[in-house]
Every structure is written in structure tokens, then in C-alpha cells.
Image 1 (cartoon, rainbow, N blue to C red):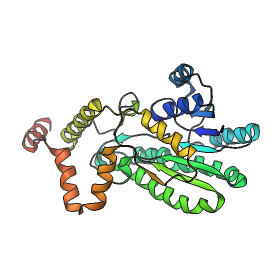
Image 2 (image 1 turned 90 degrees about the horizontal axis):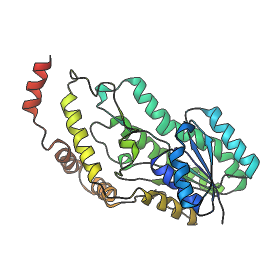
Image 3 (image 1 turned 60 degrees about the horizontal axis):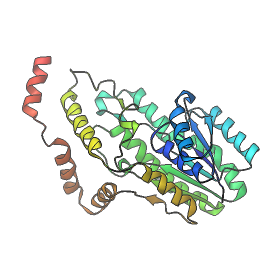
Image 4 (image 1 turned 90 degrees about the vertical axis):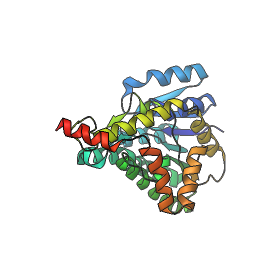
Length: 294
């Protein structure tokens, strides 16, 4: 059965693959992005798969742009059956290297932006007494890690909000689901990567640790063999199933982290995290280098 599907953040990564996959199966896909100049990669992927998409401009931090698109879809096509909130950012950086503005901007996209789109879509879903809302979260939504505190906070907020919304919308026939991926090799770590303003400041007390951590992460990403298409496949399954689960963890890395955080005492779990992050980091060398820079 053909669905009207609205997806945010489709210029690259998971969103692009979701839009192309679902469009190739005959769904009416409204693929949205903030900058329409970045639509070429999506159009190429859709064409190769033999589908069609309607590309529309949405800035999830701009309620006017959201309302225009939602009203257009509901007026012209009758309904929005599925909303996939995929638009998001990753911001790397230790807390003292991050400005208040950077943290607020990240929360605006990753948390308030999701709420903005949902707020615009709920009335039509409630009226038709059906609908599915799928929020793309992260493994970072259930454990904290140094250098990603702002990103962790945005995803923890999304997790709590989505769980509350799951209860609130059930009486109206609207399902809410979370997808919590681990690390996949997508543009969010390359062309779309964002770092704190203080990340490259050699006078920052976190300078060496930040770059040590970034090298470890990028090395792990380059080794990753997981196909980002897995997330698009999971979205497809959630759309088809009658009662989708709230939480959906798509890969072993994320499952292990979820289970370890849930089962292990924090003192043991934190040791594993610190071992993974600080292994190979030489504090004495770092202290010497800091003194030379001062």
C-alpha cells in the first residue's frame, strides 16, 4: 500500500538512502532538506533505483518552512502517513571548548527541530486516527562519552521525549519509534563534520586529548564495514509492521553498548569506556607539549 512519507535531512547519509529506497517501492516520498543546492546526490540515487521523490525545503529550526510543507502535503495529497525525523548534526568537542551558542544550535536541530516537525504533523495524523513517527536517535542516546557531551545531551533528550510521546499518541492510533544506530560511515563524519570552536585551539587544555580521540574515532569509522542501507531497511520494516516497537537497535555494536550500560555497574561500564578512549594517550607528553605552547 502506497504511503505518503515525509523525511527530513535527505541530502546525504541515512536520509538519502531512506528516501531513495522507499521511493523505489512506490511510496510517495517527500524528501526535505535545508539547502536545495545539495539535492543532486539524492536525485542521482533515486534515478538509479527507478523511483520518484518530491524534494521540498525544510529548515527544522524554522517553523514557517515546516508549516508550509506540511500544509502543502496535507492539502494536495490528503495525509502524511509516516514522518521520519532524520535531520541532525554531530558536534565534537569537550564542554569547555564549546560555546553556549554552539550547544544551543545543536539542541535546536537535534531536539527542538524534531519537536517542531512533529508538532506540525500531529494534528493531521490525529484527525485520520493513524500515523507513524520514526525518530532517528543514536547509540549516544543511552550512554555518555567525553568529547560528545552536547551531542549526548541532544539525543538523551530525544529519547525521553519520544518515550513520553509514545504514551501520549497511542490513544489516537499514532505509533512512535526510535532508531538507535551505532557508527556508520556517512558524510556526518566527513563533509558534514562539525567541531567546537576551541577544538583546534592549541592553548585549550583539551587540545591533545581532543585530537587523540578524533583520530581513534576516524580510524574506527574507516574500518567500519556496516552498510548505512541497514537503517533504510529498518525504516521500511517499521513502516510495514502493524505495531512497531518503541526502541530499535540495528547493529551489534549498539546492542552491546545498550546491554552493558543496562547490566553492568557504572564503575565497570565506565572502565570499559575509559579504556577504549584513553588507551594510547600519553598524559606526560601532553603536559610537556602544553607547557611549550604556553
